Image 1 (tube, rainbow, N blue to C red):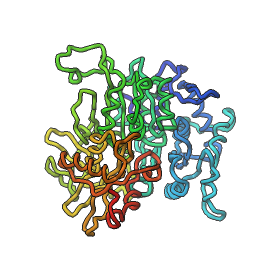
Image 2: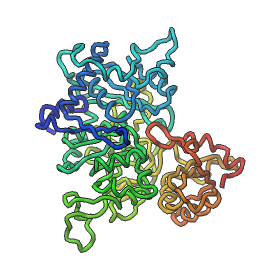
Image 3: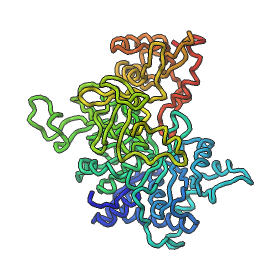
Length: 554
């Protein structure tokens, strides 16, 4: 916190200078042996630096220079982080691409960025999209070639590592694409670090703590957690596969005390029989990106235990003078995005917490001001829904090669997060919707997330997960809400009409707009998701556009 030049471009170098335990295992990955058992592999700071230097030699020898973007189209896990460290060490800009992004979409995105080269686990599909005689990057190579590079071959620049200015771009992070073509968000050296300073002080880092990071490590969230834990010396395991079938066995072996993920894994862990053994030591679940649903949170916080040092007085049951530990865990729901630079709102839920649908808490310390705005940038009264805007030094410098898009996200000095929110008089904020997903009915706007909250929490035996979208009304005037639901295994209801009837009873009781129809997602194709696991509501809106015109599904 006292190092003025510390930032996202040199955090490993800072750790190498100041951590006295350079040979202790710190960052882990895993593999399965011949019998299918989980085998962990820990890398020390010294080993991380050696791999970084070897990769950096390859990049420098192959002509990559400061300020040039290089695409990393490789599997999630530790490898994207290693390439990030190598490229930033020579001043180049890693353009991180989730390997779940379709090749045609990735090609459009990389053309927009204007990458100097592409590194892919299998370069053939992306390489085939570059036709002879057309402009193409200087290289399209296999990641295996870089991993196999001779550590004594090639050269490094002088000085090394590269020294970033505060405002220099250190990475390009693409959006999830849930509302359209992925955008390229710039991450700058100081901007991506500022704000994490206060978090470092309170982030759990006792000798027994271990973090499991299920964030996509081509995403700002995965990079943010690795930056934090490397500086704290906190053992961290990174995973490429976020599905429960892969995650739960690794949790049983690693025994994390904290798990960081997007909601996608938490939905699976909260479904069916709970992972009691895997989560035995978990005291904290970290969610970032889209805020999570209470129906899933309340099951997760029943797992694990909270050590005495983690327990705040307001978490203790009435009449309890303070025990050595409390059963159950806490869920920290952080509303953030790559553009915001980090989660800027935080809400803590424990087994003792009262239900408070869609509350994302209050802004974190680094936020200079957060407000709910109208279309002209004026603050609306408390209790009125509007556009969520923030003033914070953590916000992105803008979108790469797209100043017009950057300008469209700015209003009256605020950065628009793309969310619809409401603020209560006590200063707490509530996340109602993404601006692109608001349902514009003839009677006024209806927000999809509060409806989803009720379906998941109050029809817990029926609805595993759901997405509420707006589709054209039969009258041709406005839209009406339709829910696409994924059913729990063994759900007592399976027909859309019965589910809609049960759902509308709960929605009416909660004072919310009823559903016009329900569609049951029978397979994965019925519930499309993007590279980061977010449901693609824009695709659902297209798919169900005529549902009420031709007759509702339920």
